[in-house]
Length: 270
Image 1 (cartoon, rainbow, N blue to C red):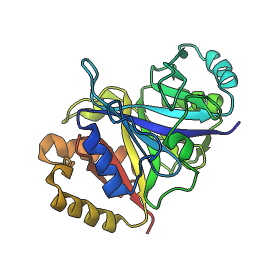
Image 2 (tube, rainbow, N blue to C red):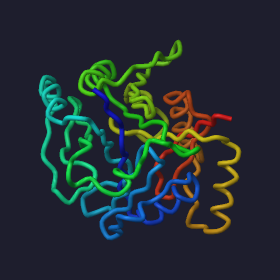
Image 3 (tube, rainbow, N blue to C red):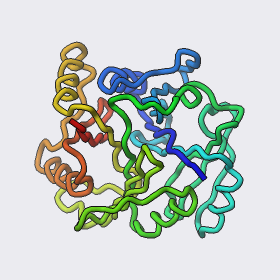
C-alpha cells in the first residue's frame, strides 16, 4: 500500500513572488509543459511539489493543506470511513493534482490522488522521484490529539513511524522521503506570543549545506529586495515564538520566513 506525500499547498497574495523565491533559493522547478499562472503556480523538488495558490476573499493566507498520492483511492477511503469524524468530497476536474479532498478526525485537510487519475498534470506527472539537493523534508501539523492522529495516518496511509528521541513528544510518520510531523498543541505553549490554532505549522527543507543556503538567500535579496522574508525571532513575542518553534522542531538547524511569512525549518546534511 505505497502512499506518498506529493504536495503541500500555500495560499498567498504574493503567489508569483513565492514561486520565484522557492526556485531561486531552493532550486525547485516549474513544469515547462503545464502553465496556468492565472490560477496557481506549482514548483517541485523532483518528488514533491509546492502548490502556491492565489488568495481569494475570505481565504486566509499561509499553509493550507497537503496532498497524498495513493495507488487506489477507493481502498484509502474505505479505511478513512472507519474513523469517526473523517470525511471527504469530490473536487472539480480542473485540479491537476487531486480528485478528492478529505479531512482527518481533527478537521485537518488533505488532498487525495491516484497515479492514473485523468486530471493529473504538470509537476505531479513529471516529478520522477529523484529529489533535488535542496528538497522538501517534512510538513508539520499541530493537533490536540497527537497520538490519535498518528494512528489515523498510519492506518489510512501506512506511513511508517520513526522513533523520536527521548523527551521529544512529536510523532514522525514517513512515506520514505517526506515526513508528516505531528506536534502536540497546547494553548499554554503560546504564553508570551501570538496564539496559533491547531493546524499546519511549518514546512521543512533538507539542504546539502545550511551555510550555503544562507548565503544564497542573502544573494537573492541583494539581487531582488522583494525576496526578503520575515526574520523569525524579532521582538519579545517573536523571540518567544522562535523558542517554541525550536522546541517543537528540535531537528531544525534554523528557521526562515518566506516572503509571505510561511515558516520554513531548514536542516543541513553537510
